[in-house]
Amino acid sequence: MIGGGRDSAAELTDDVERGPVAPHQRTTRLGWQRLVTIPLLLLVALAATFIWLSNVHLDSIARNSLQGDTVPVALWQHVLLTAVSTFFVLIIAIPLGIALTRGALRRAGPPVLALANIGQATPALGLLALLVIWLGIGRRAALIGMVAYAVLPVLSNTVAGLRAIDPTLIEAARGIGMSATGVLLRVELPLAVPLILAGVRTALVLNVGTATLATFGGGGGLGDLIASGITNQRMPVLVLGSVLTVALALLVDWLASLAEVMLRPRGLEVG
Image 1 (cartoon, helix red, strand yellow):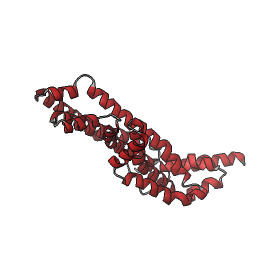
Image 2 (cartoon, rainbow, N blue to C red):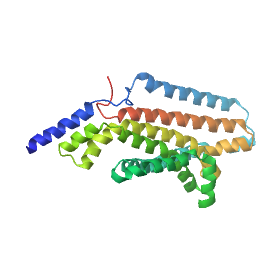
Image 3 (cartoon, rainbow, N blue to C red):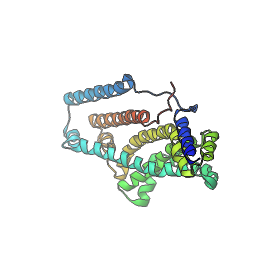
Image 4 (tube, rainbow, N blue to C red):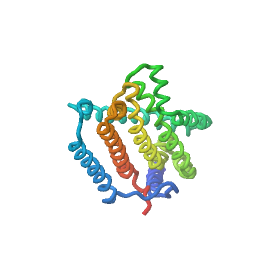
């Protein structure tokens, strides 16, 4: 009897992995177009920008804004801001999204999502200004603002992904003796992974864009180049900062799309 229960559990898990695909789950495969198109476009855009900067006249102010390791440092700060803020978004939004689909906390779902929606609906620059007034100038205020701004996509997608699961699968898993944790880890989360990954991808791109505003709170990043170009009216500095920001956003979105395909559990793709 015990052995039969184990076999049934294994069969159910296999059925979940191979089984019915929810309407929101669509075919995504790693074709050569997906692997090549975005990197080629980015290389062309960056090469064209470099050639243009090499041939345009730079006065002393523009050279001072781009001299030494100013550009690499700004780019690294931008990547760091994006990575750290996204990390905190994940450790906040995913566990909270799971909690909001469990037991009595289901009733707290709408208020919490409404609160997260307020965070994203608030203008990012205004939110950063309030945080700077409260916390002072520095990277901490920028990171908190970025987390508040990007938590909604991951939180809402986690809740939606878990709620969209066919209840009969959950009941079947419980019927063969799976614990609540086992049902969550082996049935619910694998089926919710596509939506969760889509929310993470959205949050990453949002954070790349929002990180440009960190300069107004002393957080650094490519926003320093953009702000310097606008303040000093130096077009080469502004163009370089803007191109690098757009290129970073496209690169992050491309990498996230690849991760979305590679991390998708087997059996969740339609033929």
